[in-house]
Image (cartoon, rainbow, N blue to C red; front, side, top):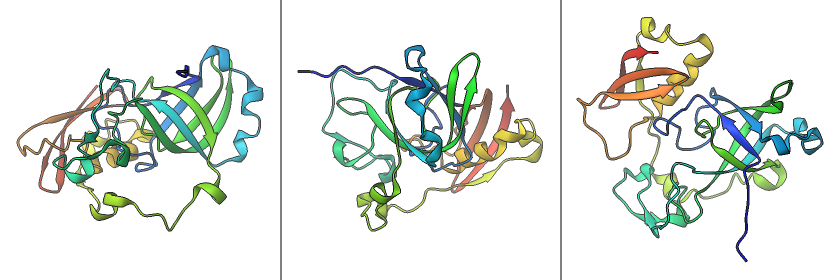
Length: 226
């Protein structure tokens, strides 16, 4: 029998579009997001004890990547988008059930008058409005495996860019968003198949449009507009 699941919460983040979202959770710890529960799940008893944990697992939907069909192979960005791997050997959003799994840091539990109790988290890789199907605590004694092999991701190295963000432009961002913006940009927001050094890209982040170019290993911010 087919299973039916429903969203218990939604993510509120600084990413209104998919472009620029870090490709894994925890890559940019400075990112701040809020988990808001759907009205029927705003029950404080369901959160009893959660504040004792430092990290949470989120099970969610790649809501912008839902398709009727699926492919057994995908092109991981870590391999430059030129090599195909089995979908179940990757974390690609293009999956039979479009489910994502992310480990985030729990920063706080806040009771609000309008939205009930919300969870503030760090390092999330979810777009604003993403439906969350379940939340589970990260348990170090069973979830941590320092000896684990990372498959092809162990062989691809880092993809960090040097970011040139002119101080006058950086100052246009709210102070509490600047480090997060620098972190997002350093992880190369471009799709793996786009490497035109003359192309100007636009990243929509925290209500601002950040325009930039990438030449070699250097990303240069050209404009910041609201």
